[in-house]
Image (cartoon, rainbow, N blue to C red; front, top):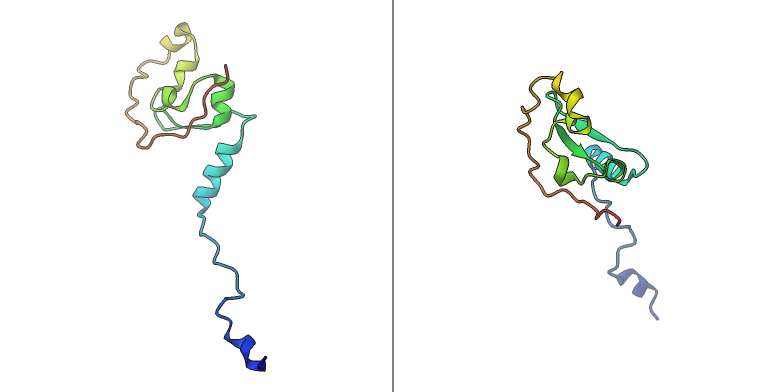
Length: 104
């Protein structure tokens, strides 16, 4: 075997580049993985704009059922009357949320 035959190996010894993950993507992954706490985001009008799997497990609603609705849906009608107009929610999910089926 010639000594320079080892130098002709075409395989790279460096590892492949790591995929770029933004801080927003890291946060999304973290929030989706939390199942022991209900974490959801409201806009300035009180409308639900994000919903994690923990919220689904604890509150019993899927993301499709709550996204775009006012947070007052979690309270009895008598309590809601004193809040005035809660129908200002116009946000609808633009992408299909990843939702796990509720256990039976």
